[in-house]
Length: 514
Image (cartoon, rainbow, N blue to C red; front, side):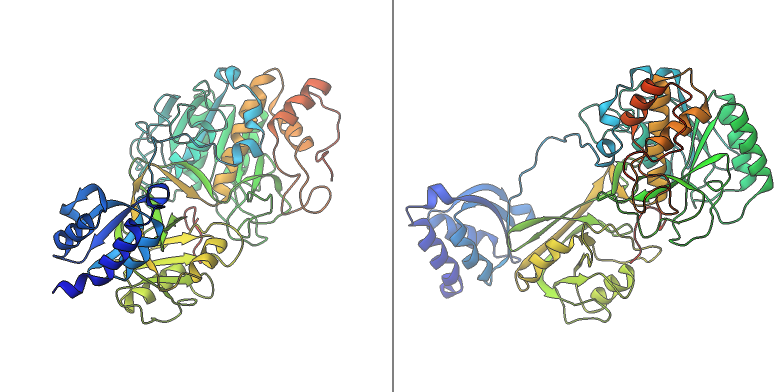
């Protein structure tokens, strides 16, 4: 029986007798095979190992170990896995990349108390830690429930981009200091759709609430004469309406974004490249950050993921629709995951491409895999969804760079952990739109004497030209820029210099499906 522990004993003895131990030690979690914990821990202690924390109820323990002891432990037949005991810190506030990209961090939002942004969407979680301190009112729409709840998650994410609070928690929005007035109209039910007549009614309610800017991260392919007329009338009364260009990745028009009285917003990524899903039309007017946008979602509905391979932690994003939980096993290379690979009891490493994420995870599951790590086949992080497919194993997305690093560690122990959180990364023109709406309100608050059309012209004139020189169907006039618009209005006044725009050189519900 004693011979079972020889690999461990040798590893511990060699490591703990080394004079470098004190300098090189790091804290690791050692997970034991069922029933083997007490014996292995006793052996490690006898050899001088320092236990930092006993996790017997989880059949594990935290130990201070030198790096050269880890491989021996990983090879021990009585040890399920060894992983770095990852450090955790008090929750810190994050500034999403889109906030500095649109220059919102360069302006004060102190005067936004003279502005109201109306968000027509799926609701607003009033109790959210990053939204509860805002100046917010709302109106219920027939059949959709209370405006201050959000069963669909979409509206709370949109609201966070516009006005998440600067409170040392979570994220910050374009207007982060609780001065901006918000009015919420809940037109989407839990299934995530509504009627054009509901949108017309919501527009009326926004105006009744005193809104000057309206955010509509929504749309559809069929135009409505009633909508067109209503938005044109609202524009004549001083309202600035802003809507998503659409996520179908084609050249079809989406409405209400494609009415002349509405600003159509395209989505770009952190490299200022147009998103592949962003619709490209003659009505696209401005662009905003819309890929991998981190913002608030209803409390506890987000997926917070951690991934570790061979003792190295990697940044991961839980696939929307993935179950929560922990899983670990040897890392198996499953290619593009088009069929079940021999991964019984293992963690599947799968490249993006060819089939949907859901099909890849199902193939892993069918082959006995306990978790799936899908890595990108293009630059950047991978933010995906299972769609409507239900799976029983946790699944995450990682970047192309991290995927390549993991490929070099196939055969090492891997662990995937998915828990609940309050913030999530979404993709979509729906995420780009609140950046533009938030900037419009911020800029307008500095020049309340300007009209809606003058603010609209200033945003066009100062947009950062992207893509082909001048206005184009992918980016419109370009990326909205808050500080540049304020400087422009300071120099030229509300009437501007009549440049016409572009003077700077030139939903899978928020997730990817495959």
